[in-house]
Length: 220
Image 1 (cartoon, rainbow, N blue to C red):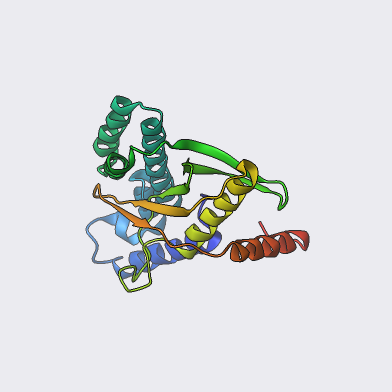
Image 2 (image 1 turned 90 degrees about the vertical axis):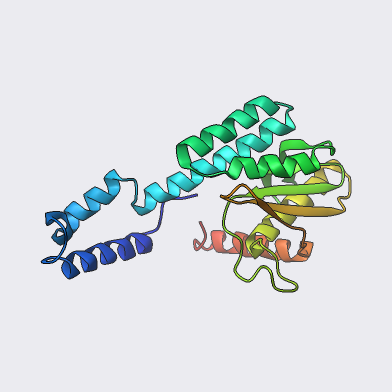
Protein backbone atom coordinates (compact mmCIF):
# COMPACT_ATOMS: atom_id res chain seq x y z
CA UNK A 1 0.00 0.00 0.00
CA UNK A 2 1.15 3.51 -0.79
CA UNK A 3 0.76 6.47 1.58
CA UNK A 4 -2.58 8.21 1.30
CA UNK A 5 -2.96 10.65 -1.57
CA UNK A 6 -3.06 14.44 -1.35
CA UNK A 7 -6.85 14.21 -1.70
CA UNK A 8 -7.13 12.11 1.45
CA UNK A 9 -4.94 14.54 3.39
CA UNK A 10 -6.98 17.47 2.07
CA UNK A 11 -10.17 15.89 3.42
CA UNK A 12 -8.46 15.16 6.73
CA UNK A 13 -7.26 18.76 7.07
CA UNK A 14 -10.67 20.14 6.11
CA UNK A 15 -12.29 18.03 8.82
CA UNK A 16 -9.75 19.21 11.41
CA UNK A 17 -10.25 22.88 10.51
CA UNK A 18 -14.03 22.52 10.53
CA UNK A 19 -13.96 20.79 13.90
CA UNK A 20 -11.67 23.43 15.37
CA UNK A 21 -13.90 26.24 14.11
CA UNK A 22 -17.05 24.57 15.43
CA UNK A 23 -15.67 24.00 18.93
CA UNK A 24 -13.38 27.02 19.21
CA UNK A 25 -15.35 28.51 22.09
CA UNK A 26 -17.12 25.42 23.40
CA UNK A 27 -14.56 22.63 23.28
CA UNK A 28 -13.07 21.07 26.44
CA UNK A 29 -9.65 22.71 26.32
CA UNK A 30 -7.50 24.89 24.05
CA UNK A 31 -6.62 22.05 21.64
CA UNK A 32 -10.14 22.13 20.17
CA UNK A 33 -9.79 25.65 18.84
CA UNK A 34 -6.36 25.16 17.30
CA UNK A 35 -6.13 23.01 14.13
CA UNK A 36 -2.38 22.48 14.44
CA UNK A 37 -2.60 21.36 18.05
CA UNK A 38 -5.49 19.07 17.19
CA UNK A 39 -3.57 17.46 14.32
CA UNK A 40 -0.54 17.06 16.61
CA UNK A 41 -2.74 15.38 19.22
CA UNK A 42 -4.21 13.00 16.64
CA UNK A 43 -0.78 12.14 15.25
CA UNK A 44 0.52 11.43 18.74
CA UNK A 45 -2.36 8.99 19.11
CA UNK A 46 -1.56 7.32 15.78
CA UNK A 47 -4.71 8.59 14.07
CA UNK A 48 -3.62 10.47 10.96
CA UNK A 49 -4.31 8.87 7.54
CA UNK A 50 -0.86 7.42 6.93
CA UNK A 51 -0.61 6.05 10.45
CA UNK A 52 -3.96 4.32 10.03
CA UNK A 53 -2.76 2.85 6.74
CA UNK A 54 0.45 1.62 8.35
CA UNK A 55 -1.54 -0.06 11.13
CA UNK A 56 -3.72 -1.86 8.58
CA UNK A 57 -0.65 -2.89 6.61
CA UNK A 58 0.99 -4.35 9.73
CA UNK A 59 -2.13 -6.39 10.45
CA UNK A 60 -2.06 -7.64 6.88
CA UNK A 61 1.59 -8.63 7.23
CA UNK A 62 0.81 -10.62 10.37
CA UNK A 63 -2.05 -12.49 8.70
CA UNK A 64 0.15 -13.39 5.73
CA UNK A 65 3.01 -14.40 8.03
CA UNK A 66 0.65 -16.72 9.91
CA UNK A 67 -0.45 -18.33 6.64
CA UNK A 68 3.11 -18.85 5.47
CA UNK A 69 4.16 -20.33 8.81
CA UNK A 70 1.24 -22.76 8.74
CA UNK A 71 2.14 -23.85 5.21
CA UNK A 72 5.69 -24.48 6.46
CA UNK A 73 4.38 -26.66 9.34
CA UNK A 74 5.31 -24.05 11.96
CA UNK A 75 2.03 -24.35 13.84
CA UNK A 76 3.32 -23.23 17.25
CA UNK A 77 5.03 -20.10 15.89
CA UNK A 78 1.93 -19.25 13.85
CA UNK A 79 -0.30 -19.50 16.91
CA UNK A 80 2.15 -17.34 18.84
CA UNK A 81 1.94 -14.67 16.15
CA UNK A 82 -1.86 -14.75 16.46
CA UNK A 83 -1.66 -14.04 20.19
CA UNK A 84 0.86 -11.24 19.61
CA UNK A 85 -1.48 -9.61 17.10
CA UNK A 86 -4.41 -9.77 19.49
CA UNK A 87 -2.30 -8.37 22.33
CA UNK A 88 -0.78 -5.50 20.31
CA UNK A 89 -3.63 -4.55 17.96
CA UNK A 90 -6.70 -6.04 19.61
CA UNK A 91 -7.59 -7.82 16.35
CA UNK A 92 -7.83 -11.48 15.36
CA UNK A 93 -6.93 -11.62 11.67
CA UNK A 94 -4.31 -14.27 12.39
CA UNK A 95 -6.84 -16.42 14.20
CA UNK A 96 -9.12 -16.15 11.15
CA UNK A 97 -6.28 -17.52 9.01
CA UNK A 98 -5.70 -20.27 11.57
CA UNK A 99 -9.39 -21.23 11.45
CA UNK A 100 -9.32 -21.37 7.64
CA UNK A 101 -6.16 -23.45 7.69
CA UNK A 102 -7.67 -26.07 9.99
CA UNK A 103 -10.32 -26.71 7.31
CA UNK A 104 -7.83 -26.84 4.44
CA UNK A 105 -4.59 -28.20 5.87
CA UNK A 106 -5.09 -31.55 4.17
CA UNK A 107 -4.15 -29.96 0.84
CA UNK A 108 -0.49 -29.77 -0.18
CA UNK A 109 0.11 -26.02 -0.49
CA UNK A 110 3.05 -24.04 -1.85
CA UNK A 111 3.22 -20.71 0.06
CA UNK A 112 4.46 -17.41 -1.35
CA UNK A 113 4.86 -18.91 -4.81
CA UNK A 114 6.48 -16.58 -7.38
CA UNK A 115 4.62 -16.68 -10.70
CA UNK A 116 5.49 -15.13 -14.03
CA UNK A 117 4.25 -14.97 -17.59
CA UNK A 118 6.93 -14.60 -20.24
CA UNK A 119 4.36 -14.33 -23.01
CA UNK A 120 2.57 -11.42 -21.35
CA UNK A 121 5.47 -9.82 -19.49
CA UNK A 122 4.43 -9.73 -15.83
CA UNK A 123 5.15 -11.45 -12.53
CA UNK A 124 3.81 -11.64 -8.99
CA UNK A 125 3.61 -13.77 -5.87
CA UNK A 126 0.63 -15.96 -5.04
CA UNK A 127 -0.12 -16.55 -1.37
CA UNK A 128 -0.93 -20.25 -1.82
CA UNK A 129 -0.94 -22.65 -4.75
CA UNK A 130 -1.93 -26.30 -4.83
CA UNK A 131 -1.98 -28.73 -7.74
CA UNK A 132 -5.44 -27.52 -8.72
CA UNK A 133 -6.06 -24.15 -7.07
CA UNK A 134 -4.66 -20.65 -6.51
CA UNK A 135 -5.51 -18.82 -3.27
CA UNK A 136 -5.03 -15.20 -2.26
CA UNK A 137 -5.45 -13.85 1.27
CA UNK A 138 -6.98 -10.44 2.01
CA UNK A 139 -7.63 -8.56 5.24
CA UNK A 140 -9.84 -5.79 3.87
CA UNK A 141 -13.54 -5.46 4.59
CA UNK A 142 -15.89 -7.46 2.36
CA UNK A 143 -17.48 -5.78 -0.63
CA UNK A 144 -20.81 -4.05 -0.03
CA UNK A 145 -23.82 -6.22 -0.77
CA UNK A 146 -21.77 -9.42 -0.84
CA UNK A 147 -24.63 -11.50 0.55
CA UNK A 148 -26.85 -10.80 -2.47
CA UNK A 149 -27.28 -13.60 -5.06
CA UNK A 150 -24.43 -13.66 -7.53
CA UNK A 151 -22.27 -11.36 -5.42
CA UNK A 152 -19.34 -12.19 -3.17
CA UNK A 153 -17.12 -10.65 -0.48
CA UNK A 154 -14.13 -10.07 -2.79
CA UNK A 155 -13.70 -6.96 -4.91
CA UNK A 156 -13.48 -7.20 -8.68
CA UNK A 157 -9.84 -6.07 -8.41
CA UNK A 158 -9.17 -9.07 -6.11
CA UNK A 159 -10.61 -11.46 -8.67
CA UNK A 160 -8.64 -9.89 -11.53
CA UNK A 161 -5.43 -10.10 -9.50
CA UNK A 162 -6.11 -13.74 -8.74
CA UNK A 163 -6.75 -14.47 -12.42
CA UNK A 164 -3.38 -12.90 -13.22
CA UNK A 165 -1.65 -15.25 -10.77
CA UNK A 166 -3.58 -18.22 -12.10
CA UNK A 167 -2.78 -17.43 -15.74
CA UNK A 168 0.92 -17.00 -14.97
CA UNK A 169 1.09 -20.18 -12.90
CA UNK A 170 -0.55 -22.24 -15.63
CA UNK A 171 1.93 -20.93 -18.18
CA UNK A 172 5.05 -21.52 -16.08
CA UNK A 173 4.00 -24.88 -14.65
CA UNK A 174 2.29 -26.31 -17.70
CA UNK A 175 -0.61 -27.44 -15.52
CA UNK A 176 -4.26 -26.42 -15.52
CA UNK A 177 -5.88 -25.19 -12.33
CA UNK A 178 -9.54 -25.97 -11.78
CA UNK A 179 -10.39 -23.12 -9.43
CA UNK A 180 -9.34 -20.16 -7.30
CA UNK A 181 -10.28 -18.64 -3.95
CA UNK A 182 -10.08 -15.28 -2.26
CA UNK A 183 -9.93 -15.76 1.52
CA UNK A 184 -10.86 -12.66 3.51
CA UNK A 185 -9.69 -12.76 7.12
CA UNK A 186 -11.95 -10.76 9.43
CA UNK A 187 -11.00 -8.69 12.45
CA UNK A 188 -13.21 -10.84 14.69
CA UNK A 189 -11.36 -14.07 13.91
CA UNK A 190 -13.75 -15.39 11.26
CA UNK A 191 -13.20 -15.59 7.50
CA UNK A 192 -15.08 -15.36 4.23
CA UNK A 193 -14.38 -17.07 0.92
CA UNK A 194 -15.08 -16.09 -2.66
CA UNK A 195 -14.66 -18.67 -5.39
CA UNK A 196 -15.95 -16.58 -8.29
CA UNK A 197 -13.79 -16.46 -11.40
CA UNK A 198 -13.27 -13.78 -14.03
CA UNK A 199 -12.32 -14.66 -17.62
CA UNK A 200 -8.65 -14.67 -18.50
CA UNK A 201 -9.50 -12.26 -21.32
CA UNK A 202 -10.57 -9.64 -18.77
CA UNK A 203 -7.20 -9.73 -17.04
CA UNK A 204 -5.32 -9.55 -20.35
CA UNK A 205 -7.40 -6.54 -21.39
CA UNK A 206 -6.54 -4.83 -18.08
CA UNK A 207 -2.88 -5.63 -18.65
CA UNK A 208 -2.95 -4.13 -22.13
CA UNK A 209 -4.65 -1.00 -20.80
CA UNK A 210 -1.99 -0.67 -18.08
CA UNK A 211 0.81 -1.03 -20.62
CA UNK A 212 -0.81 1.58 -22.83
CA UNK A 213 -1.23 4.07 -19.96
CA UNK A 214 2.36 3.50 -18.88
CA UNK A 215 3.61 4.07 -22.43
CA UNK A 216 1.88 7.46 -22.67
CA UNK A 217 2.86 8.47 -19.14
CA UNK A 218 -0.56 8.13 -17.54
CA UNK A 219 0.01 5.05 -15.37
CA UNK A 220 1.84 4.43 -12.12
